Image (cartoon, rainbow, N blue to C red; front, top):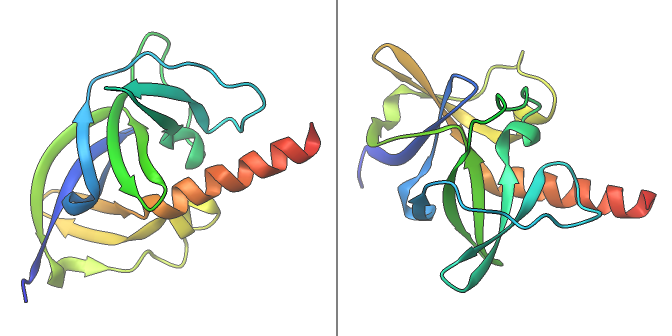
Length: 153
């Protein structure tokens, strides 16, 4: 059994995040999105990925971060789920890196709000912290917000 984990890394509002490489379908530049009416704020729209319709979720909104600066286009980290591909909109793509499992720690108890449930843990790397995103929970939170917004409509 390997003592390392490979991550596809990205940045959101200056923070360094990663998702397991095995869950990533592909990483692509900004794609034009079609807005969808009556959806939660975290769902930015739909993209056409070579004939496949993919929901684009803005991780900044899921995590309660400030909006992107006007004119800054997000990048897409397309992940595989049981229900098909989903695009996670991020600020900037990092590298694929390996992290030793012995530098992993659970999120601190002081981390509160929706972010706490979306962060699996933290890897202490040389000079920075890698936040492992539980993208399934981020997607589920978007879907839950969607159900709430539909109930209000």
